[in-house]
Image (cartoon, rainbow, N blue to C red):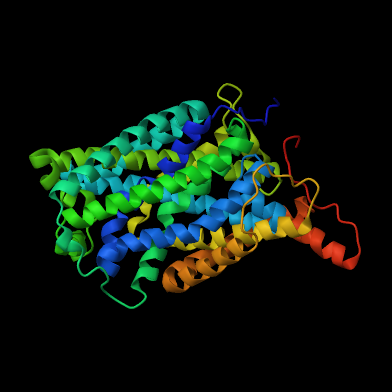
Length: 461
């Protein structure tokens, strides 16, 4: 192991828990009421539809992760498939999006804290900042420690969600599911695009692939297994929320008559009596903290991988000799996280994260097509995604449909991130790399030329 190498210390269970921890958060504790306001009880269908569109990217990423089990995930695969320009855009965009989602989780837990603790809004921000510092320290201290803590937290949260759902089957009101569909004709598609970010964590395990034991086996099992489990959890919990809470409360129970930001607590009294709100609030705070931890763990690997490829400064590739973690990349990620919590109205801009995740997931499917068509001898995955290329085509078309429904501001935000990523590449990375990616190999073959511009691994850099 060199000074820039990470330790493979994550088994299948903690790897799955990192993925689930990145999903068990705002998707359960904040977004259901916002989706309900758009489409009524059919928000349950929206979660299933979002999972269907996510699945092609999950399959594609599972294959590419076993071919390139290194840190970087989304950035690495798109860079090696489509070249460093697209890689830089995807890496910076996915990094910002995931840090944004972590900040959203820590700020979002403030709504639950206000239900169970005598805190002012200003104090909640300081609590979120304190938890953010704790998460950063945990990630600097070791991936194995962070993964172990994540496994314990997610396991406890799943038990709490199971209790919530099972009790809801006894006291919930089935009449609240009628009518199932309300709102506009394509409201379910719009709601699905809005809750799409709930599944963003499913492929984030690939960002820490370099730290996963037996990646050829554990990465596909963790990615696909966590997605399947989360579909079941989302459907069960959202159905419980709909059956327990008054529709008016879900639609207007938030600040200023907006959708409720605490949908799981809205019907908690019916489940657990007077202590119901407190119980649910504690579970929410733990889950949202877990989500932030998983986000920092995964997102910090993007600048690490990009630094290894000379697209970002070399300091970001440095591995702490004591803890074997990318210290500088974690600290940079933590600094951005703290700034977002302190100064940005994160909840109001949640759609931005969803819009860019949809775009990145679509590009991931294109990246797999590039690798398959290039037929590189170095590309030898242990897991092969089924249904090629129709599954990938469906993922691209489905993602495009979602983008048309998500609104103008999120699209402008995604365009801004694309422009920023391109500027970083042109200003810093372009003069330091000459890779062309798998797509360059395809072009060279068509011209009858040799191409040496693709490198799949960076372990010896």
